[in-house]
Length: 267
Image 1 (cartoon, rainbow, N blue to C red):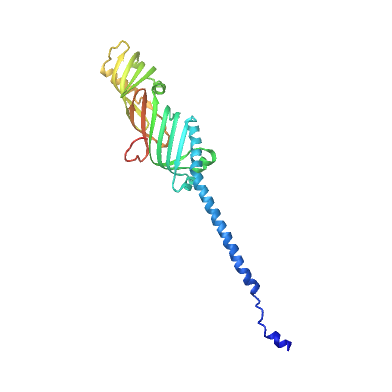
Image 2: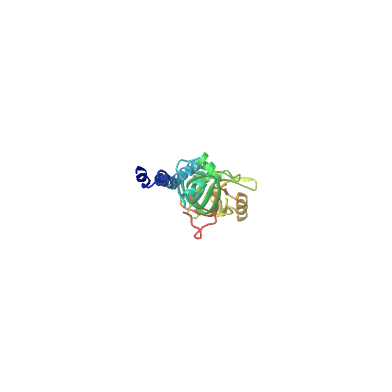
């Protein structure tokens, strides 16, 4: 009798304990996957948020060393921002004061560059700026009369030169050498761009210190012997001269890099 009662009970299923554990394992796997996704997104977000600041600080330190001045400001933009870690910069804005550019002592430097590619290894590892390419860019370089005089004074044709800058005109007072003869003179003229790094002096008038003009052929020989009157040297970011403007006490150089923007204006 007892056996028949026992046989009437439903048999226990052998896989029941394992079936109960399966949903728990699935839940644990889902939680782990969610945590991993959140971690990856957090890292990506942090990389996006910090990339412009880190890249900007690295470029600024490199330019402080290159320009020889602490007065450097850098703004970096890129989309997507993590592209900065690979050295791809969408827009790079640089402003500096009292610096050295090429062979020039410069009062101010301003540049806006687009699609700049740099070598990320030296930049983030050693704070060295190695520019691979620049899509386009414009720059403005401001030079004072005193800084210009130091560079012009390196020319063998003039000695003890003093530079005066008036709107549209440059005046050089000093000792000039023409046809093997040295004499004190004043040279009035204007500047034009010869090529990517040189300026020529177009002589309008040369007078000796007592106010007497010298013959036109002597003036032309002096200009030919002096030019190029200014060599700015190798400029950063592959910049090349395009225009020069003379103002009151200052000389403004405009330059472009890569393909100049359609408007062609310096910042």
